[in-house]
Length: 177
Image (cartoon, rainbow, N blue to C red; front, top):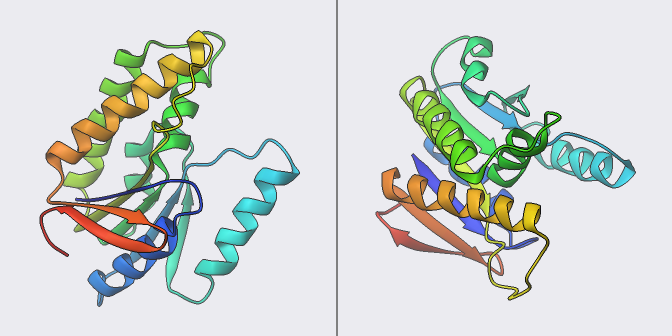
């Protein structure tokens, strides 16, 4: 597993795609899209990512929750790019009538990511660094940040490689690319 982390518009998505293509030569490429679209802004973001991926050989699987179920959509093991963890954690935490706890969400997401990792040749996970603004948010947002932070830490611990993308420049924090 490779974990790629970065701030908003840091270039992490483009770097993740380049990494998947370079490492996935000769095997299927899958793009696991986790974003649920709620408005025109979300639709525009998804459409932008689709345009950026066009012609690169990715088979897209829309999987906003229950990420391990995406294995059922893959014809054979390959290189999988999961974009992105912040959406998946939000979908799992807030997707039902009742908000789940940060610990329950983190446990579920990490368990499913590890199952996904076992069913692929290479898993590249994109996640966001949303922890540096110093703002204190409402209780449910803080619980979400706690869940995402726990997921990021546990995935970083498990991943072979962790890279942080800063202003379009990847910096390897663990392992090698």
